Every structure is written in structure tokens, then in C-alpha cells.
Length: 106
Image 1 (tube, helix red, strand yellow):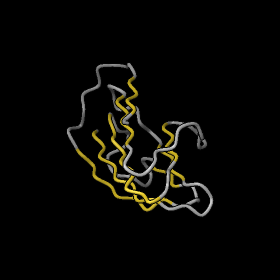
Image 2: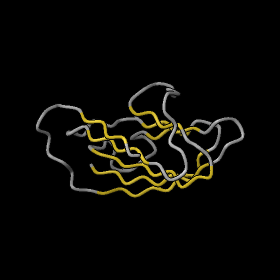
Image 3: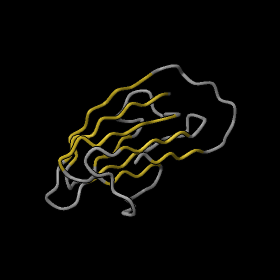
Image 4: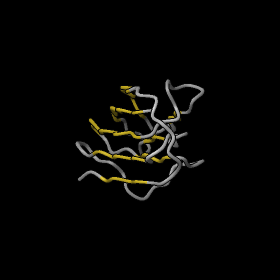
């Protein structure tokens, strides 16, 4: 079941770009920031776990928050309303792997 997170902010205009990414996530933390990812900060992102294992996805935090993993076939939608997605962290449990597709809008 998808989860949607919304947030308020200024009336900053979107850049009008869509960034598709496919990531191979392991038990090492994968970090997406403006330093290594095109068009960040993002306004909205949808992440889809194509598995095989569960993946933890954390937005705008300094470390992974292990509260609700995305399992095979599950997704996470985050819509800040402004370009405020500055950091995304992804990680599987020890020994796990997952392919994660992200569609981001900036």
C-alpha cells in the first residue's frame, strides 16, 4: 500500500524536470543528494521497490529510520509541495538487495 507524505512551504516554482533513476540497493547505505543526483532538490518523488528484498527509505534525515520498510511491490510517495527533498537514504537489511525505481519531479 503506498504511503504519501506532504509538506508545506513557499510558492517556489517547479523546474519542470522529471528524473528517472534505477538503483541497486544493498545493506550499505545509498545516499542521494544534489552532489551526486541530477535536478535535486526535488519537489516530489515516487520510489518503487522491485525487490527481491525489503528496503528502508528515509527522506531529509541524516541516518536511516527503520520504522516502515518498503517490501517487494510496495512504493513510497513524497510530495513536499516545494523543492525541498534534499537527501534520500536507501538501505536493505544485512545481506539484502533490492532494485528501486525512482521518479522524481523538480
